[in-house]
Length: 290
Length: 256
Image (cartoon, rainbow over all chains, first blue to last red; front, side, top):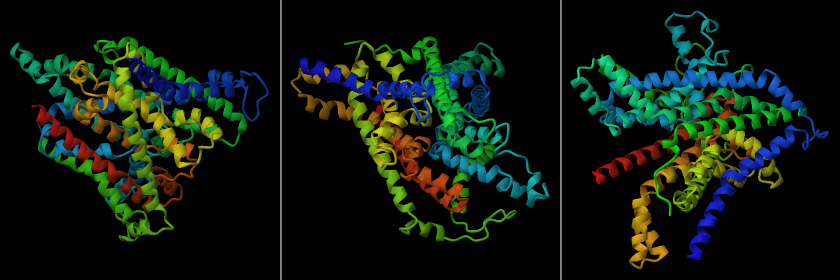
């Protein structure tokens, strides 16, 4: 019995040591660095870095740009994936499509970003095809989709990366949540196709996938490889902006980079706690305690 | 019309792979040619040359990912079980979500100092530990969905009938957990295999994985070798997804 309790305590301690301790100690270091207590150029306590970050433009514009990219990506991705999962649901359960849909999951962000660069840039494949078809006379006439101000390349790549995941998710939910039965019931009661879609199918699928959707917004906001290859200096997504501050040759920028990372981590933790309080069924389970 | 759209969709799914494969065989691709001027296997032969290090890079990546996947899968199995049956299960779950939700490269930024003082930066061991730290919470999250009252009751029945801890694990828990163990292993392998930002920051460019190589080749403007490295990056996940999907299908059939 004592051995069992010791094993339980050891497991819990191991969890804290691996999951919580590194993040907490990393945050402490970043906080101390940003406040001037440690670091190469430390001169004692100062809030300069924090004032620059909180009152200046770079952090908030990076955060806003990341949020814009994430929202546009998720909206496009949800629209496409819901349309495919609902209208092609039979083909997604059997046949070639049911296997092929898993193929894009093999593509990491790095590979998809490289593919997008070689396809969508001014000298990319689409531009070459446009030239051969006589749509453009010069590569400069091809629209700027890569390293552009609106993050079009980043959005397209992110959509390519996450849409297959959502197609599989909604396709599975359609079956597991017995949506078809509700659809038939609604039709029996005289609901039109539009009413069935808007009042039955979409609410069930979106409600069941809501927390996953919120989590994906955070994932896309924090993405690094795709904006590193396809983004530009201004505006930058948050991960790229933080890394650039930390790795810059200007040592005075490092405290700002750490302040930005602390602020970003705190914001994500804040969002997680809001999700936890609002979606208790996702986090809380009915497991009886020993 | 629906059929045509589906065929277009299926072709577009396979297109990136075909495109990268063609590019990996290319030598010159001047604008406005749609296809590379020269198609040769020379790039793929370059992989085997010891000076190219791409062959070694592939196995370095494989070694790192397999080690991380093995460690996380094994350790999370036992830790998650205790957490799942703990009174504070939900607190632990939320704590696991914190590093899981944060961008790995941001975690690398705040971890980097400790890796520096432990002299782990620039080493494969450092990259393995860093990847382990980001994959471990994910492993716990995967397993937490698996432990339930039925499994606990079955385990307790085994003890009641005189089974030892090892016998209960070998004859009861392990056979029942095979799906979850494989799922965790595959998923963690993919996280490690796909990782770039954290690997590059902790490995400071000295630990060359395939993702790091892709960026290096892109920076060197060598798109053909970058495409080759991309092809190599995609192969193991394709095999894994194939096995995983087959496996899930097999289980569903069994359960039915």
